[in-house]
Each structure stands twice: as structure tokens, then as C-alpha cells.
Amino acid sequence: MTEPVEYVEIARAESERGELVLRERRVVDGPACLELRANGIFVMDNVETTTERALATEALGLVADPRAVIVGGLGLGFTMSEVLADPRVEVCAVVEIEQALVDWMREGTIAHGPAILADQRVKVVVADIAVALAEAGPATYDLVLLDVDNGPGYLVHSTNAALYEAPALTSARAILRPGGALAIWSADESTDLEAALRTVFDEAEARPHAVRLQEREETYWLYVGRVASDA
Image (tube, rainbow, N blue to C red; front, side):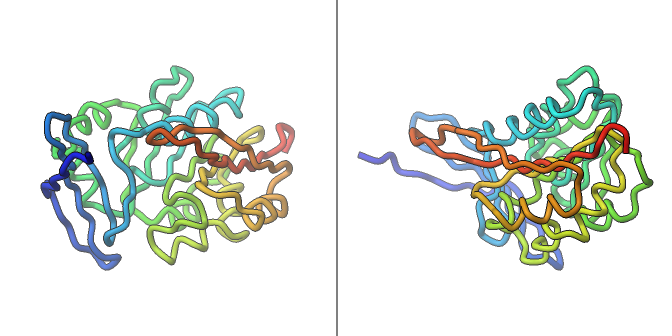
């Protein structure tokens, strides 16, 4: 028999992009699960964080010296936390478009938030990631991680589609140092994204990644664009 589930709203915010909700998912005799939703769409929770952490660990392995990293999308902070666990990282800039989500992390509405943001290497930028990429200085980062959606096939907001096209990818390349890389996590294979990366970067590849989610096997994808070390 399936356990009855209760949902308790923790926080809610409205912006021009719509509604952002933080809630607890509770079952009888079980731990509460924190869940983030945007316009009714599930974004992530704090129970299954395998994919968020894998994005960071695999991406960090792509670059010999990832001193400066920029993460597009704060979420519940698990990708950023994994980046900060790497002692090579000296700066971790996190770009998040929703001020409310940043506030929930800072104020402790998301309990683990204050400790993560207290790390002196963290710089939080409240902005659209596409704008932030376009405005960042050239050759200032070693690694760009995009964790805004679950890839081009699962957009949180329809306007995010442009992130996976050549102009935004070109902006990402411009801020990378020689030997740097862009990594994009996707829940589905996307030949269009791979093709776009190949038009912009010196090297591009799609890496399948097996994950186990709620007792089932899934294949997620890491899309990588590299800048040559002598660029």
C-alpha cells in the first residue's frame, strides 16, 4: 500500500516569470523531503541529488586547473556545494535569476543554505544566465556549468531555449580561458545541442551517464564543449 503523502508549503514567491514554491513532501513515519517547483513544474528536491552532484564532479574532471567556475542555476545548492568541495576551486560564481531563491538560501529557509553561501569563494549574481555570460569579461573562467533546466527538452521557462543555441554558447566560450570547458546536464539526448556545441567549440562531445532514480535505471547526458589549451 502506498503511504499517504502530505505537502506543506514552506515559502512562495511571484516574479514576472511566474510562481516559485518551496514545500515539504511528508509521508507517515518517514523523513520530510524539501521540494522546489517553478510554475507547478518539479525542479528538484533534497532526496535525490545524484544528478546535480554528478554534473559538478564530472565537469571538474574536464579541466586541469578549475580555479574559477561559474554555475548557471542555484537550485537547492547541491551543484555549487560539490564545486566547492574541490580544493582547486578559488572562485565559484553562481548566477540565479530568482532573488527569492537566493534569499531563502541566505536566510535559512533552506536549512543548509547559509553554510554554503558563507564560503568566501562564493559570489552570487542575481541575473539571467544568458545576460551574465554575455556581460562577463573575456577569458575569466575555467569552467561553465549550466544547471538551469534539465536540458533543452525540459525547460523551466520557455525563454531558456536560447541558452542551448549558438549565440549563448558563443558567449560561454568567450569567457573561458584556454583549456576551459562548458558542461550542460540534460535529462535526454539532444543531437541539436551537440551540433550547436560543435559549431562553437574546438571540441564537443555527449557523455551518457547512468543514474538510478527511485529504483529505476535512467540515462542522463553531459554535453561538453572544450576550448583548446593553446586557443
